[in-house]
Image (cartoon, rainbow, N blue to C red; front, side):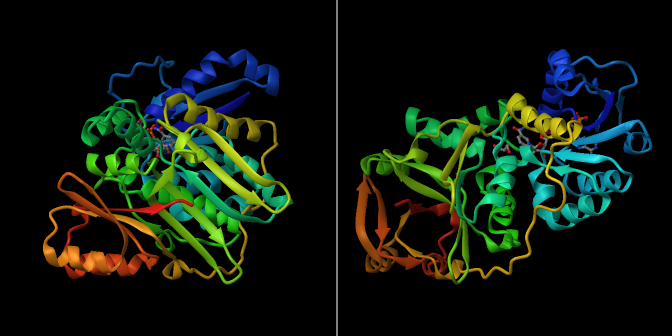
Length: 404
Ligand code: NAP
Ligand code: HSE
């Protein structure tokens, strides 16, 4: 018997319980063990839940789970950052393996938690933290043993991709689609983390740190979100035979690396243009394997719970990667050197701003009263400086990269 302590019974936690219930006998056939959820931690024990558990399984006391010597594996799916850091460290220190879907905690404490798990000779696995249901991290850790990986590129947030797809394909309004994404269980408790790009940034921090085998900090990643997009932008992208995606990219060069999360204009013929709704995709470039692409559901109850449980299976069958998967390469950040063409739309412009923008534009696009430019090759910081010199609030302009 393998006993699990489940921390959190929201969207993902409920999915974990459901899959274990439904697949009990198949799981036993595979692992030759009964997998049992012994305790479930929740915040509000009196909340009505649409899942039935044996009496005494629910608790609001973490200590009860921590002190239970029969619990071998902790699944952390609460979403709280500092509290889950405490739960994860205390669990590892008590000899329990840990699986989490919480990218915020992995991103913030990646090096420390990986080192602690190695020191304790335990598993610390986080497959569901990047790309929802896509089995990308396990494959990546394996590919890293065989390849030097020079680039990772991906659509990593289901909520943003869902919003952008429905705005482009159906002309839906931003606020309306965000509400639907929340109802479908894709969005974070505070959806600002999704739409302002922080969730994607955390996932790139995890992926990039693994791929480049050196620490990429959250603050080392250039960030832009999708919340300022409007229907005029969408119509202009359509006129360019393109669409818009929130794309994350980390790339290594001889002199250093770049790491960026920005809305990105993608030609309709590009592979990433066809990654739609809440699907995610991650592509790597390895020196032996060449290009590898992973695609699947990026968010939602069952796909995410599936990824959590694939980590649990690796622990039960002892097939997880031992040791610390992080490298100690010294990396030089070259984001300030990124010089590209950008799309920039500013609302409510005056003559002075238009004059300044024309000086740096390669092409001017208009739709109704809206004017946008495609810039000449320019540093992103210079563009942002121009906007702040005219005191243009971030909500009034939308900026995007253009994928080759
Ligand atoms: P959720 O629906 O908000 O559920 C959170 C659960 O954790 C609830 O059961 C809540 O208890 C419990 N909880 C929250 N704070 C707690 C505390 N201080 N002490 C004890 N229990 C606490 O969240 P979710 O969507 O399942 O997401 C969980 C984690 O998975 C997050 O880190 C998220 O980023 C990650 N994730 C989610 C998805 C997705 O598609 N939803 C995909 C990948 C990763 P109550 O039920 O009593 O309120
Ligand atoms: N809020 C996240 C998303 C959940 O929309 O991608 C999956 O990590």
